[in-house]
Length: 176
Image 1 (cartoon, rainbow, N blue to C red):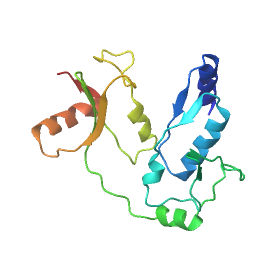
Image 2: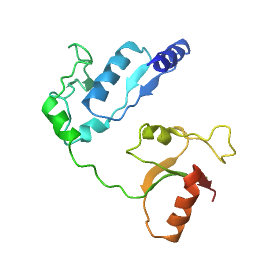
Image 3: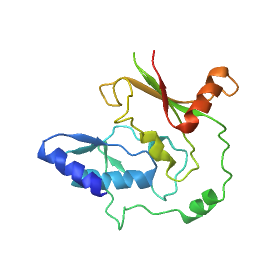
Image 4: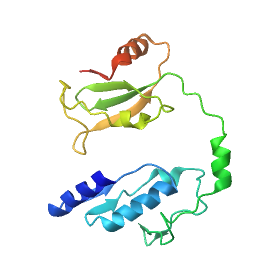
């Protein structure tokens, strides 16, 4: 939260609006609603993935009033955890993912490949990998750069197997 406050203060001092984005369910949405309420230059993204979930671990959904997310006024984040669902999901079988690579393709530029283990602690941090200070060719991710990210699993193909071996030591990129 400390870095978020510092970035929000910087945005306010330069009169620069910014968008809060945090994938997740109603707990994440409640957290973002509270942030957007106190960060003067913040707004929320128009579509959040919580609207796409078939289930959540809160009793209530986040209220949308007049096209805007309402900040809960109950204690804490303002959502009530459904303890029965938490227990059920804690013991649910984990899906098998198999081998896959995260592939980030830049329009007219390089393609970045890296491994991602969704079960590893802190694994999502790997998705934010930026090749700063390296010899990465082309632009880094940003709104002005056309970028497509997907999960690539071509198990058994020569190209996939070769890239799988190469990414064992870290991210790799190819150029057109």
